Image (cartoon, rainbow, N blue to C red; front, side, top):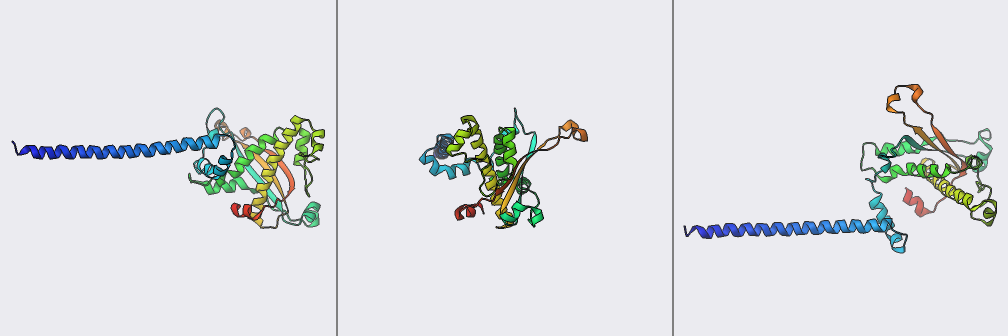
Length: 266
């Protein structure tokens, strides 16, 4: 009986050593978890906070973290789930601007309409880790549609017209003193918001034109299309299908970008 105590002591000692090791491991895990949670909270505050010099310097890393491949479109959920397919379409004129302005009768070469959204989504099919670049056209589509929807009928007609060689869409430079005389503050704000989003859409189409046709395109035309989703109960009923809706941007000059921007795009 006396000889058994040392062996029992060793068992108890090993047991407490094991407990201490588990305790240290738990402490390390909790410490790492706390650091990760604290870092996430700090990044969230920086990402959603006001624009500062520090935020600007961190923006590339913050965007990569929050707008990465697992970015979620919250419109999938109530109260406003998606009810239409959104597509960004574009085509280019592959002749010189002078020839393009005179039309096909003068020998201008026009491309077919390209569905950029369909091309992007094809790369994301069955891939939950697809890059955010597969969502660019839809993001532009949604923001542009909201801005264009606020235009009056006459303004929409101007926006859908062709404006090349630097011609102002609304007849005047919106940042000039003349614009403040021509439009009241509310109208000017609406037009500036639209113009900013049109420039984004045309710039995106210009980069796509370089990607698709090299430097051949001189003009681009953009069309935003929304295809209403047919309700399930009418899926086999031809009469239940709704027509597509469009918002158009007429012909515009292809935008040029510096080497760094072009390299980043590629």
